[in-house]
Length: 472
Image 1 (cartoon, rainbow, N blue to C red):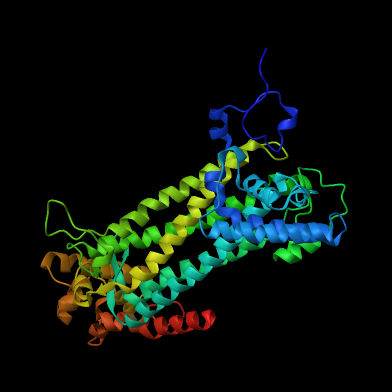
Image 2: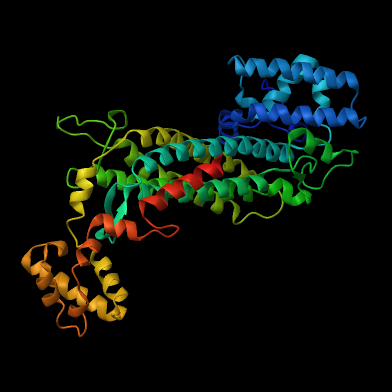
């Protein structure tokens, strides 16, 4: 005969079963060692639930007082690192509930009235993620502030703008940095918008069908700062759209920082030499004493793949699940937690790293002497003097070919040489006057792009002012 007794503590749901869970299954199914980070949110949600139960007359006033007293003690134990997390109790919810019952007796057993772990965990995740989003939004703000400071200091610092990694046209370093500000602004908008869908209360949906107790979900939502309740109990306990959306926003943010990192790595290379990074963001080589490696930007680039992987993991997790809750959803937490941790750490270090960029302005200017950066300005000059754009484009292309043969840049031509180079295009040569060389300078090129969004230093400063005003 099989002995169905066990020295193991009884599970909260064990009455239906005739044998205990094996140690292997306990380890495989338990989540307490990663979901305990939601302990504060779990306590907060439980206190709001208990307050509602008492307000509705479902539990007594003394039960509420005992629950509040016990939860205060448990929170203190957790914050002091004294709480004894137990694998046998599976998850953060049952660990806290068991300790509460040990402290306050039957009142602790009454706390779970009118709810399930299904709506409880869905609520805890949303509370936790809401806190994480608020932290991320603040860190994006720190990143933006420092980025704007560096951009303003370099609003008139010329550098090559690239397409296909080939020199294209002059821009300023400040204008280049403001492109990343715009990306970060969209990131902040996405997280703020995601927060709206996170901030809906599942609690009260119970296991999947709601509860027969006369609960007041709107009261709980107000207590916990939710904007509204989830309006379908089946969806409320099984929905993880908000987690996927958060990971998608995170993947985009990390993609932007990865692009920035790639540029920092390129710019720091001695072959380019546009910037240097502060030593605290770099490491050396164990064998080559001269090396200064941009490890932080490289790791940001690498960790982007990690965040992308978490997004795919959650999408894959949810794609085959029938309604309502399934144990699969336990796998939502580790990718979600890891994504939030990665984004928070990356933003924190990036905000500091921005202040550690040392710009090598002379190297940037020297690079503009390669690649005929003001060729488009010459074409625009011809157009303004009456030549059709396609003819102007052809004339300048011939001039670039001639400069390439001579081994010089366009501003180094004499007026006659420039006219001769364009002579095969009817009407081009006679439109080239003495004033042409003014438009072939880097400063002239930059100053001419003085519309909103352009790279003229005055427009870069205006963009920075708008950004600061919007942040105020």
